[in-house]
Length: 93
Image (tube, rainbow, N blue to C red):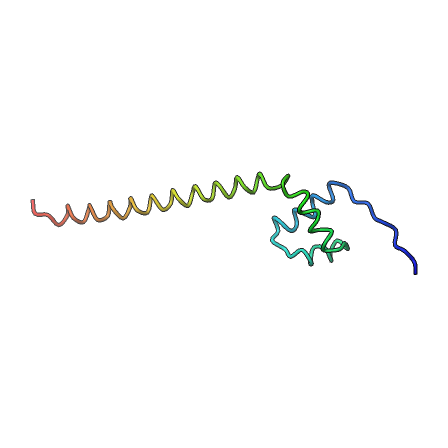
């Protein structure tokens, strides 16, 4: 049985592979097959390198949560102002 030569991957290659599965929302198996590496190796890289990629994603998630809270507040204010306008419009002068 012939052994395969062990492949060495650069840090940039690993980071790009992890980006493909984290940002592209693609399955690990599909990306691994495309890059001709074992899915478990790609999962291991994700565990190792994801902390480097997460700060940007985390800040995006925090920003999205903040914007959703702000939207909910604005919707409540709009609803309140609509009701107040209807109340004052219906009162006799």
